[in-house]
Length: 222
Ligand code: 5RP
Image 1 (spheres, rainbow, N blue to C red):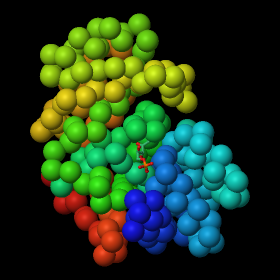
Image 2: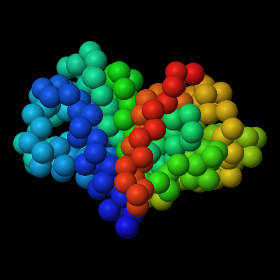
Image 3: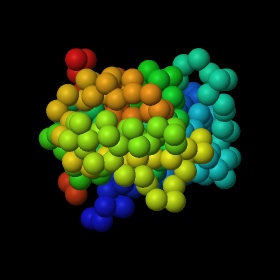
Image 4: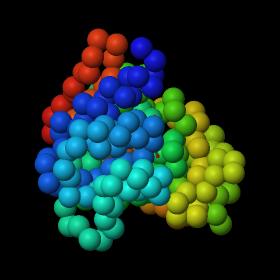
């Protein structure tokens, strides 16, 4: 099976985890696109979605699924999103699609984070995928120096601005052995809007696409 077929498989499987009639959180990326399409195909009546990007909002609306502002809801039963990497505890790197800030905001509203990913995303240690960090432009040089002290090499993502109009740094060479600690540390640096480590907002469950079928991993409380 191709990677895209594995993504389609988990996008489809995630529909079963959506409560009928609920407002749900919807993430961003090619796996989530499969999920949105499967949700529409299934005719599963959701009341609406809070979306983490303009691209997902557009796709949801094209399927006739109402898109709500985050400030219109207090709680979401479930947030469905992909990941660039996920480890055995449900900690993730996200932001390959530059939507990390809104993704963390929507994840923060959700009771459960359902991660959908093909099997290549499951890793023993986070960090082989360059860590995305959304930043304020005037802080870029100082943040590049700060990441160097952690052993990381940070470069601006060429030609990319987020939906918030801000640049992304991609940090290579990190081995993130303590995701909670690194997320807390980097989040405090002036000029960091969002770091793409999802540790405080880790996955509750992961649907992993494999050639043998969907593998479900439930993450126990820490
Ligand atoms: C976007 C993300 C995506 O969830 C992540 O990049 C995975 O994308 P894909 O489903 O296309 O592999 O974090 O900011």
